[in-house]
Image (cartoon, rainbow, N blue to C red; front, side):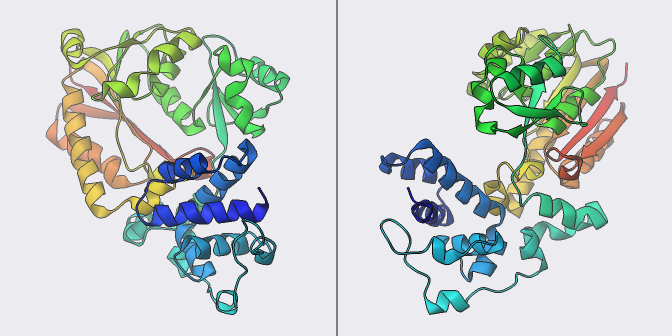
Length: 388
């Protein structure tokens, strides 16, 4: 495919996304009909689509419209490219830019320039002050690929050496003693011998820092209550010999835990709801709660353009319900660790304040937040101790 044909494919996907189709579905639909497209073509189209999603409002302003075509014009302009080189009208390239399009576009207003949802701007500005604009700017760019050195099998230096042997350059990252940032050939990382042999796992550096911050002294039994794919269970298992159980209200989300644990050389027992009731209570219950994902909008930018007040209210109610249920699984004197990949105080500190008011016998032991300015995704962690 020519560079222009890749742009045209992205335009078609973006139009479907604007109509409400999920980004992954739009890309899959295009790829199924693009038998001529190679792996590099598919990767390039995907990159175009996600670059626009990260800059949804600024590309529309610069491109002079809300169509996929206008947004791709805006993206190319923002990145300093000559749009005429892509919009040639030859072959599968998009039609040349006309006089109206050439004259269209304008500097976005301040919030659009930051690609910040207008309804969240006051909350985020209040939470982060002078860091508000830098944080929003950071969310307009692609996130780095981070790996976690699996201490159950190796150390960070040896893991990086193993990656290098397969052509993946990396460097240590300060957010965690296990964090590795891939700086070259990221798409190869999951096909390396280091990954296959369980020396590394894909995990954001701030997510690793969250696990590092959870106190484990005297902890013999751990429950990962909203386990999902088991990323935090695996990271905890590499830090401790404690018994670890994983549970999720949707068991299908946990289908990868067993093979991932086997590859990593650790044991994690997956429990259904009936088994969980028999096994509780636990010294530590980890709640990696469903949330807005606002701290990870670099990775999942579609969330930023779909998220609204009604969805936030739904999530807040769900988080409160999950926290209340999780407390029932904590042993007297045990710990509850609540984490989100959200930047919003309503999902973080305010939820913990609500829980403390509802559970006066709990004590806040730790509250810490990370933003993309620290290098990884945005995360929050609160650790509470229940009374004995």
